[in-house]
Image 1 (cartoon, rainbow, N blue to C red):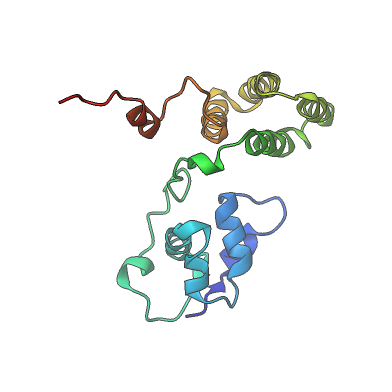
Image 2: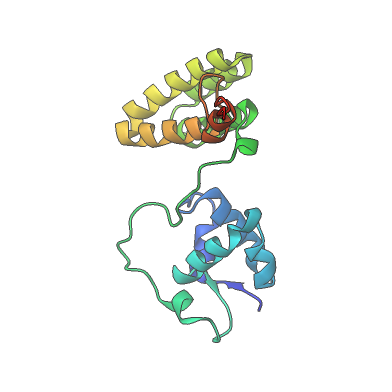
Length: 186
């Protein structure tokens, strides 16, 4: 089955409009004329959920033989992100990823509004060579976000940043903790 973008999708992809997540937007960019199975296989299988959500919200269309659960539209007053984002796995956690997230946040929130401040944060991020200095710049940036966009927005950005950072040695994951348990003696 081939999917097509709707006018709503074209509007979403126009410059200056960003209501969807980065993954949803990238999937929309690739959607025109692509087989459904190719799109569903994207993002380690999360593509299927993204495609279903985009179809329910009216961004993508396909043949009339869609299953009933994908053709029902959600109520128009659904706030928040359109998909529940899973916490990144250990392989996706990295300082480089966290740094790129901070650069992206800087560009999205400060580049147009306050170019001088954006340049300051860019230079500070480039100069940050270790985890602590990068987190100091991130904290300063999130304080500015709280002033400009509110504490709730800053808190959501901070939460996402913490999901992207690699765990420190004192943060034990359940699997790591299980490996460190002493063996039971008979």
